[in-house]
Image 1: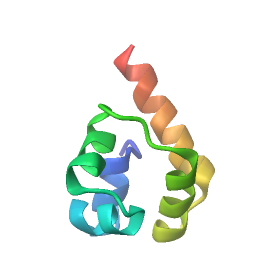
Image 2 (image 1 turned 90 degrees about the horizontal axis):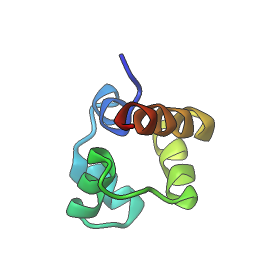
Image 3 (image 1 turned 90 degrees about the vertical axis):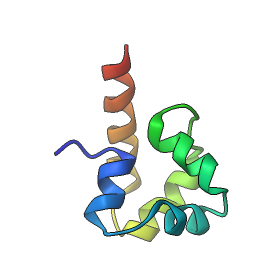
Image 4 (image 1 turned 60 degrees about the horizontal axis):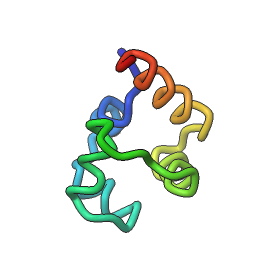
Length: 71
């Protein structure tokens, strides 16, 4: 499975609201990150890495992969 923000969230059994709260952003902002409508900051990637207990590199690579597919 591709490791996008959505799949990472689903793999960990989290809701969009839970992840948005961890990032201290609104539900709609986080939803935009998942849909690729808005870019997530490096600081937020670091928060997500701690939240999911994965490396920041894993999240960055997933986002890059997702961006390449959109091209």
